[in-house]
Length: 182
Image (cartoon, rainbow, N blue to C red; front, side, top):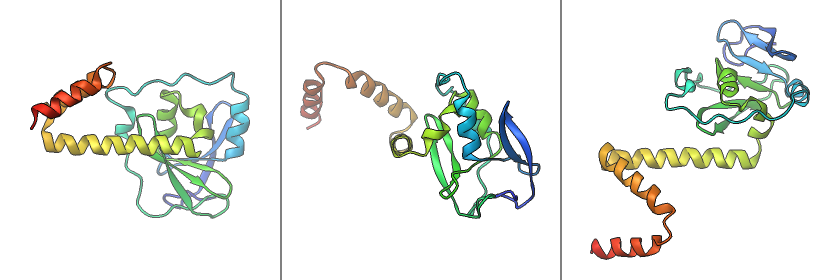
């Protein structure tokens, strides 16, 4: 069995106690068979609470994934990238044939630190992926407006927008602002 990143042999290991995986000694990635994950998940006492993203997220220290296609170490099918979301900016690679998952260096540790490691079975579903793409789109839109407005004006606009979002007289305030801007 070869690493999908650098084609080196994978060695048997454990990601958690009783969770077998295969590790690459060169890139420090892990191959996780989905059946092994599901069996481990069933033995867990319950869902771990999700930890909100910190201001300085752990995943910012992760290396960008190597470009190019990746192939399943078990069955040779193309791996597909899926967004994690929930404040986690990296993607996970999954085989569409055997459902195995490739985790790049420190991705499991990041998921674990956020309480998301026990949600792996949900991350590839349409609902989770829609929310992850929506989150990514919001980050892109925010970045675009911050470039256009500048950091200070964007921060003030965002603060005002948060205040306005829950205001009971939101529509009247917006009407007044439109009237003032003419």
